[in-house]
Picture 1 (cartoon, rainbow, N blue to C red):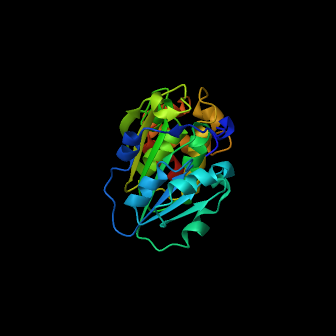
Picture 2: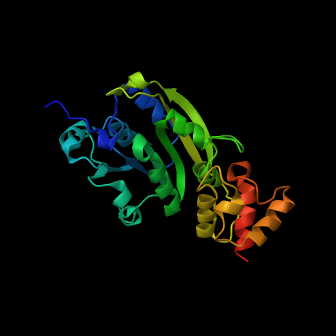
Length: 262
């Protein structure tokens, strides 16, 4: 095939280390499984997913990679590739076409759009058995950040509210072509029993607004909310409105959200 023109705008760094690819898909898979891959690239991960799962649906935005991708999948027929922008797809509509019992998401996510993709997956509120993604190491650190640290943010709260998060292994930058400037990390998310919130939409908005300006206090970030009710919850947990969002645990955010939902 002709040499491929890698595109920075799509964050294209193809994983070329087969050992790492095999390690990513080395997971127990339940029967009647369907896996979503976001950003298939030339299909090096996709073909291993096809060998492991009953059905694979992939999303790839770059039509120029189509021939390479389909060539690498020539031994398989248990897949559908949507050559489209995952962020613009109606994923629920796509999934309605398939009969499955257990849903997974496995992907080498483009660095430039990691957070929006994960936020979309969370907003879809799907019953996902497990998510496993490879991301920039610095971003992976945010997923698992502790309360009060600089990496703790709204994405940390979103993910840890919905999933048990586990760092799996580091992937050296030399495992990619073209070689990125940073190392990557593979992180897994396992579904969990979530703390009850009365209004999930309000909870997500509250968290997002609380971290809107990270160096500002809740008093400044949440001016549009009922500060009196928020202060009641904060006081009962030993805080006041001068606290910053990064100092509050997920449980406190849940408590504030439920107080505001009364």
